[in-house]
Amino acid sequence: MTIFEELSEAIQEGDAERVAELVGRAIDEGIQAQDILDKGLLDGMNKLGVKFKNNEVFVPEVIIAARALNSGTTLLKAKLVEEGVKPIGKVVIATVAGDLHDIGKNLVKLMFEGAGFAVIDLGVDVSAEKIVDAVKENDPDIVALSALLTTTMIQQGNVITALQEAGIRDKVKVMVGGAPVTEDFANSIGADKYTSDAATAAEEAKAFFAV
Ligand code: B1M
Image (spheres, rainbow, N blue to C red):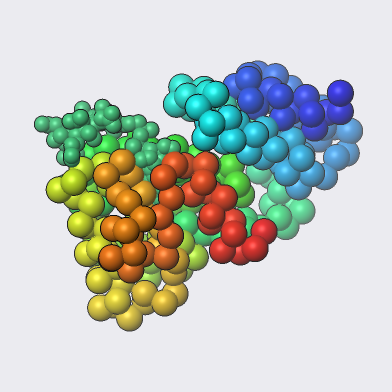
């Protein structure tokens, strides 16, 4: 088994200690940080994403794998900066106003990070105004909105209206999701993409960049 395969397996098993040990070994062997990231860490996270989508693993496994991914990327960060590796895109993510549910939003965030995006997480119960401010401040490629209540999903539309009113709607792709959200609803509010789960959200985000 190659060191990349070992890393991918350790990520899928959520073995943070082993991930740290393998990343350290790969760095010592002079392997490029980008390869360690793409062929090892992100390969593992992508494979886990597919298993999550197919209901072969569940939320706890994804959270544990994300912790393992973090232990690897923390070690790699300095080397990645040194090699000038850039994230493939920037995402502002939030759970909309009035909504405190963040488990799904956090999973979407993890999948985006696993796919190589830089993610700015605004948290829960985030107003349209705050999201517009964050877009102006951070110039993201994607705004990702989560809503878990039938009473708050309408806020996703309010965010799009606020982006239009601020004259910055065309600068970002708006992705929406959450249990009560449907493709029809997403179309009705003018979102760019609806996905039903976190792994597909990251895949579709990559498709925007044709990566
Ligand atoms: Co709440 N809650 N909750 N809750 N809660 C639901 C959503 C509910 C369906 C339960 C029920 O009644 N059967 C119901 C909503 C009913 C409705 O609107 N029709 C409900 C209610 C009513 C409420 C309160 C109003 C209860 C009360 O106080 N009377 C209250 C509201 C508080 C508020 O937000 N203002 C409330 C509170 C809470 C807790 C705080 C106790 C807790 C949240 C804890 C937290 O998030 N930190 C909670 C929980 C845990 C749930 C349930 C049980 C589980 C939600 C969850 O995390 N699922 C939920 C019932 C259920 O869904 N079975 C329920 C796991 C998570 C991984 O799934 O978030 O759907 P989910 O994410 C999925 C997809 O939706 C998708 O990806 C994930 C999978 O890969 N996805 C995206 C999510 N965001 C996406 C964004 C994307 C793409 C995909 O692109 C950007």
